[in-house]
Length: 192
Image (cartoon, rainbow, N blue to C red; front, side, top):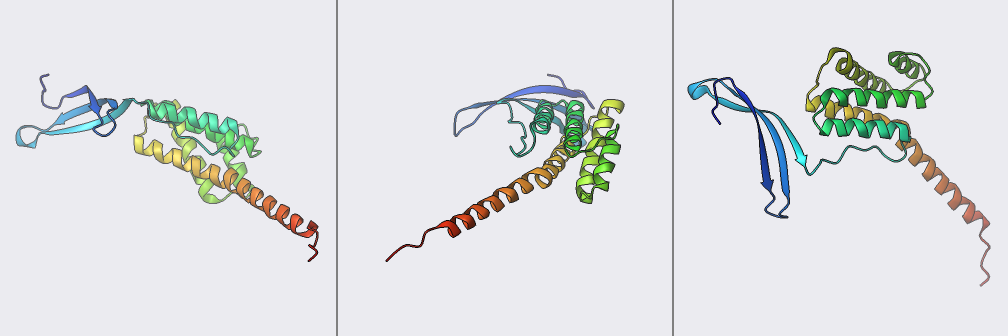
């Protein structure tokens, strides 16, 4: 394939793992910049087509509507649909706000309601950043980078750990201690 200065192209690559023998199929978008000795080849995007990357998932203690929106966003992210992923993560935040009792008509207002309820500032910031990414994706057509989307996904996941996973774990442990305490006090003394 002829390459011209400042050109870009898409190529497919198939790799075979030397350890397990499985194939990996990737589509790579490349760009050539510079000329002569200053020529550089830059990979713009790399998308694994096969095997399909597993989507990000949230802990089972997180309500299904939030987990579902988050997983759909992750699948879009894995498919290279950056704008769709941004909107999807925003949707997960909207579901989280509703589940936490926020009722304002806008997502920004819902996030402010949660702030007024005393949610930690770092969670509020994470939710608001995700809202902005989703809004930019849908209204301005902004396609955020893979790294930015991964960061947003992690921010949402961290928020769900603080809001759902840790409280559920604490409840389970408290319940376990209570049962152990009750069992210890209802035991009959043994006769020697």
